[in-house]
Length: 301
Length: 301
Picture (cartoon, each protein chain N blue to C red):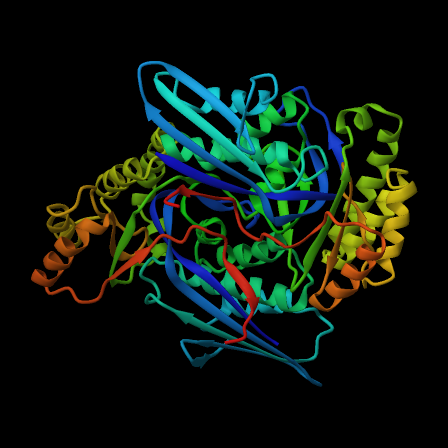
């Protein structure tokens, strides 16, 4: 049986973490946007005599130590009595570690595709397994639940799906510019001094977005958060300022990656492409907003 | 501006109510299925000098007393300072009062279309307004939150969207047979002696579905609930037994309408049509399962 799950890439606009000893209650609050590109997970199950699980990233098989989260999710969802081969092929549209939620995309895609294949867990039960291993292994705090809801999302209560609460903001006609420049270690930032600023400014931004829940307000708050916390600086800030010259809404930094994103209308696309060309930036994507739950189903090609 | 919202028809398979003086905490627990037919709501907004709201059902304008829920939802979502005309056109694929969630479909469709038009409330905020007026006016307890999630749903915590919790069960290839026979007063049944049985048997059914969350199990539990509570009897039960002869899974009663539903595979469709023809039943629908959130967007025709 071949099952495919599509999980949108998720960009966090602003956030603050909620740590908790119970990983199901840990999470993050804030806001962000889900893209119509992201992670495709294909799961092949075949009965046999021995239980054997394999994971591959972008077509290349990876060791357990490299795909710890996906292996843990698979072990927990595949029924203990199952014997046979399970292959989990994960394909990512964005580079790893750049803030597009690949880790959660792989975890959630694996969980949903396996739950669909084995029909043994519900949507929330499977998503909770993905969330738990993401948190335990430091993959992320809020991506799984955000990706499960799609759209432009606002995390108003922290925790796994079924405990945390995600709201959605109505939007119209926006496209998303996404420019991945480099990796950033979420773990290190969450350990550093900057965490205090993230907590105070993230909380403020969320309160202000709740009062005026629009995509435009989210972008103003995102940029203010990115600059006021000191996370967005140097080259990233310079590029954002160049982009702002041709955009109606401020661009901002992807939390947490060395990446930039912006919401734009169709009539802003050509101006953006010119600026990027002038800056010799070639790797970027202009995507749609993915406004649904993840897709899961039998794959017939 | 013309905005359209599609809200799936929702069939409850089994349930038990949770009354609460706060309508946002009232709701129902249980399970059910959302159909790819249901309620289409078209909202037209036009600025003017006077505030004027009109509601129409299936093309016919209706009085405030007939569409109390929709008018209340509209008054709460349209910004107080708005002046002009707002027309709310609701079209129903199933007859009213037969257990297909038309009331909640109209309320939620109105709420989402208006929130989209005015961009002043989030998805959860708008849905809560729909839930609240449904509960206050006795329209229903669990339809709004079930319709918001789509698919085959399991309400595991009662309340409005953002408070209640809905889980989804994975399914494959099922279609839904829906036969509306007549009206049934939810209010009267919830006041009667039968309520005690509904509470005990509904709770048991939910516990058993949580342990084995499959569409097949839901149908066995639905039928057991329908018969053991005494809700399904007489002609309805006779027709269900006729249908069962050509179905793999038991058919059951729509809660709460004088209506029957069943899950079936493509290869069961012709047998079902024969039985219905033998029984001289002409009004029925064979639909798909609607497995997404409601659709909301600008309508361009």
